[in-house]
View (tube, rainbow, N blue to C red):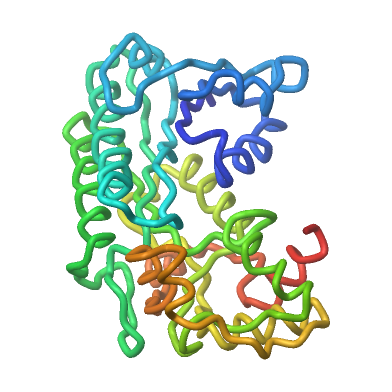
Length: 307
């Protein structure tokens, strides 16, 4: 396949390209930082990668590169786990809403259209709750992230007018060498780890290798259409996550991180971690998808020794 990818220099994107590169695929990587992309994907190691500079929020010549691709994976978006100033909130929304709009625009006008668009969303779509359980058929929430996800998904839905298969994957918190765990592990190494906030909030997660495998299956299986939760079938409460992390690292999990400390660091952005949501991948399981790491302990036992 010839696969166009945005966000290919990010946490998930780099893992995806590395997993796909040995399968004789070609890649068109759209990036704002060509030098960084060339460092990650040197021509000597990745001869089938074409690096294309682009502005995600603007139409341009880059859009012509979509024609002739078999698939598009649209992973670009400003990071969520930062302090939400008004400017950053605007960047979070626009990078997803406008970025997806321009990708769909490129697909629509392509002479030789791709057959599928794989577009992420997030479990933030459902809002937060300590008591409710959410699956793909649950209604959206009404907070900022829920509004972002609705706008993001709405833009992606437009691609169906061009008769292109659409797969929306609502990501949970992705666990791998980097990402959220990279912030959690250092305190545990110093014997100062513990749950964040009350510890009772839900943590809906997925091992990065399971996420990449779900994307790969979505690329290859034409029968996969619609919206799917990219989460483990076994979400955990924050207490269990931290206890398991301490067990795997042979460290205590005794020093909670108080709410106010996270609020100082992340401001409004702390809400996602402090409140959480219990999300189940009902439709993903209905596909027959097999998780390599279905439990938090199996995931952490694989990841932690690599960090």
